[in-house]
Image (cartoon, rainbow, N blue to C red):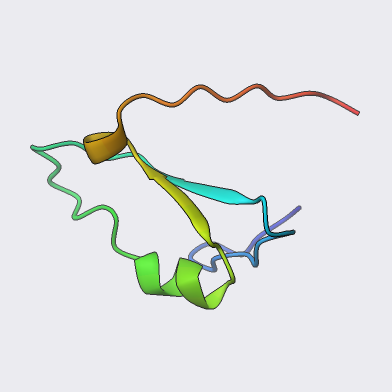
Amino acid sequence: MLVKKGKVPNARDKNSIVIYSCGDRNTYGHPTKTSDYIAGKWKNEHRTMTSGEYTLEIVAR
């Protein structure tokens, strides 16, 4: 899926998850677009700063 820079895509389904990767000394202000993800119907979230590491498995179809 090609997404324009800065645009948050809509979630594909109710199981979609957004992962905010940030830490205590984060100088970028992440996560900054949480309201955009909420508007895009992202219901599940994981924040590495509070929830710890997250591993992604990417399966090619």
